[in-house]
Amino acid sequence: MRFLLLIPVLLVPVGAFVILLLVATRSSLDARMRLARRLEGRRGLLRLLGAVVGCVVGAYVVAEDTLGLGLLLSAPVAALGLLLGVLLAELVVRPPEGPRRSASLTGRRATDYVPRRLGAAVLATGATLLALASVTSALGSPDDLGRPGRWLTHACSAVETSSRGPWPGAYYAGPLLLLVGAGVLLALLVLRTTVARPPLLPNDAPGAVFVPAQAVAADHELRAQAARAVVAGLGVLLALPLAGTSALAASAVAGTVGCAPDWWAAAAAGLLVVTALAGAVLVWCVSVLLLGSRQPALGQNSALR
Amino acid sequence: MRLSVDTDDPTPPYEQLRRQLEHAVRLGTLPGGHRLPPIRQLARDLGLAVGTVARAYRELEAGGLVSGSRGGGTRVLPAAADRPQDVGTRRDQAIAELTRRYVADGRLVGAADADLLNAVRTALRATGAAGAGPRP
Image (cartoon, rainbow over all chains, first blue to last red; front, side, top):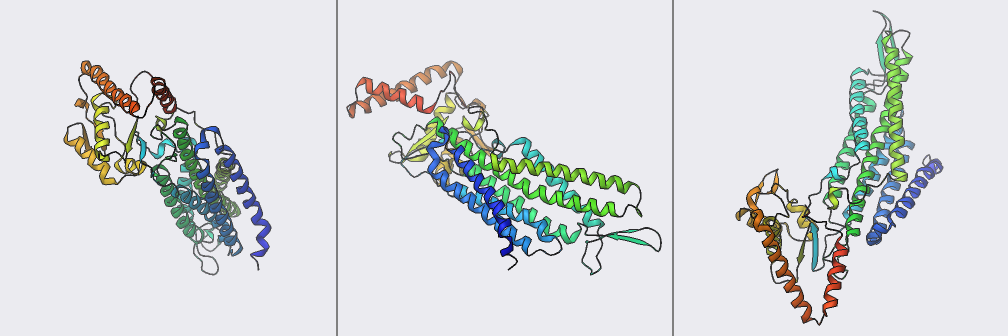
């Protein structure tokens, strides 16, 4: 029954991804992409399906929340759904079957398609999350019911201790890192599939052996679009938990300032800076998912040669 | 540069690939050190079996045109291209032979000279501008 109460909450992410689909579909109607639009429409539906399923499962995880764990895991779960949708969309592209076929002699690499600045930001976010979760797990202590890593305990003196929670220790970091690890592996698999899949080119057109330059460009852009969605999805998967983890840690550290050394205040401020940066990466990734990013100039990329 | 395969052609697909790649290497279109696409990528793009593409690569390797290494991919050998002074002649010969075949086949289907020329222009437009020199 609690799940039913979340229907209004569900409408927001679902609505957002419907807008994403509409924007993606409109951009795919660009003249350069017309040759592949029929298949691209099907692929767009699969991506939407993945995003919607991810959001629904993410909302369910929130509904089944225990001590904030569901809230922390909901974004990674939703991002996993998005990545699965992109994977399915890549898998529906079948190898050519007509008698006359052509292929480029240029090897494709993931780096041809991954947006560099966003990729670097997501990589830094992942490294920060791993480092922070490791530190908070190491510093955490059991709470009053013995759940590991839910409190931050500091010995003020030989007889007095100060405990503050919730602390993002092993209780939260363990499941989170497992989910994040699965997400990173899935993202790498989707990228590999995106690069390796056959081209999205019409094979039944007369004289198909002469592959129109527009179709080659469209195929490149569709791979780049998928790679952007993967990197941005991975960014959401990493940035939201990092923002939550650092905010929670900052709150707990700041709460023990009276007893703890002075530098803990500086640590709390540093954690708030991490929260703000993670928030910025999150906004960037969501805007890439919803609005797309600037297309590369045609003809300048090696994959088009 | 693109490779093409016609599965209706009586020539086996691996031989079609080998022949096109040999021309490209000898004429310097694929320069020494150029890395050929991975076998699996080319096979998937062309809808062929991996073994078909692997055989074409093996034959090129046996002919001393490319060298393959595990992890390093298959690369064109620097000395595989013809001497620069021979490349022009060889390219002209290859173009003349291909054109002769095209015109002969076109005549068989009743194409007029204007039809043949228009078809060439259309194909050139469809494949995009190649520029003055060889493309990687």
